[in-house]
Length: 231
Image (cartoon, rainbow, N blue to C red; front, side, top):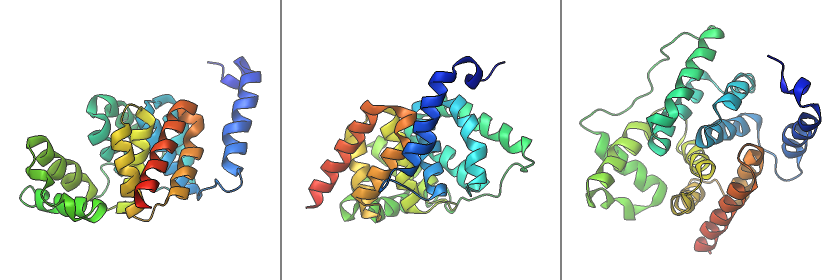
């Protein structure tokens, strides 16, 4: 199969110059390479760009993301995208890891048990969003699942910090669109974790070529709203 540089040379000339040079090197919008690739992988999961994910993952590994970090991004995405949308990415990740000689399964990263996952999940919510989350799990079975499953099963895992986990969640939500209330809440959660307004705008900027302008502008609106709620 011919590559896009052969079949669509004019398009690829402009796209590659923009996505891989102009955006990456925009003054004031740069990110460390490993952080940039972490955000891009999460964004590609969010927008269902599995073919672009396949192209990007080897570069992410070369940029310093460990196999554990990549798997943690994929695992956590299930709570925000659902297994129906994530399974193809998990399969693609396993294929690329196998091709690169990375032995599977990777070392386990779980820190909770079925007995303490709710308690530990609630604590993670409190750490990110504040004391007001202490009783939120009592608001119905979905809220209980959110605390025990999303936060207790995934946010408590090693491999990524809480700040990194909040950043990738922001990317999952921004990329899929239609989740602006949750996106604004997680923008605030990011800020609570030290990922300030300027950092989040850099994240959106670096991910714009992968999700386009409308979702990127919506994400920036949510960041600005979260920042205003702090002032």
